[in-house]
Image (tube, rainbow, N blue to C red; front, top):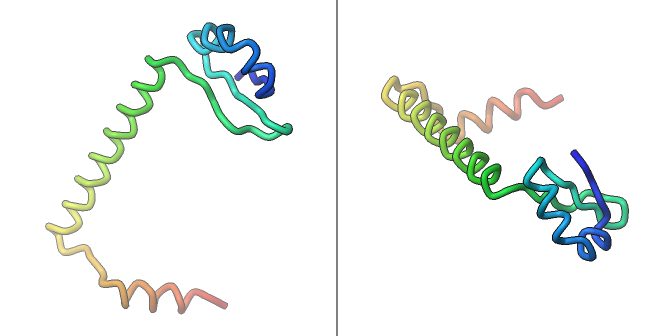
Length: 85
């Protein structure tokens, strides 16, 4: 992934938009990554993937609910506390 600093990205915004059509462009501020510019097509794909993953997780949860594979909050907390040293 190509990266550039925020000042350059601001000054060359049109170029950033063109580069984003080819692949993600990282934006750094004070040497630290703060943003990634992606094409509208890539963004739509990412959102679609997130939606599909959420649907799959909901279906998994519904299957657990139907099969009775559940624990109440108190049981989970107790189990976690027993794992602590």
